[in-house]
Image 1: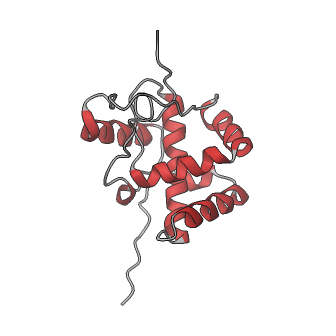
Image 2: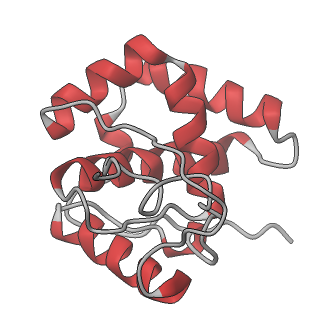
Length: 154
């Protein structure tokens, strides 16, 4: 018996934000770096990474954090700098940076609070949250304020 997971229905499927040729490149990168991930799941990951970037760009300093799987998609996207820069400008009106921090820094309120903030921000931005891809948050101790565009002050 084969089990197929249905894609959640929401306002806008964030997969539609990514150019199909860019999507194919990102799916290939994810499945190459993580052979345990199948193509369809990688497409869903890219879609959620797109929604995460769009929401983060619209709500800087909110302490948004990607899930482990969504972080794979974001990192793959960042490697394609021209495509990523164009995407950020189009969906957020500016470049959304990934700014590392020290190991002792964590997202405000911990992982559960960050997960809730992030999923709410994605939904508020009008995108579907694929909850199966958000079971756990990425270890973002290398990313300031939860892996989004919020450079340190001072």
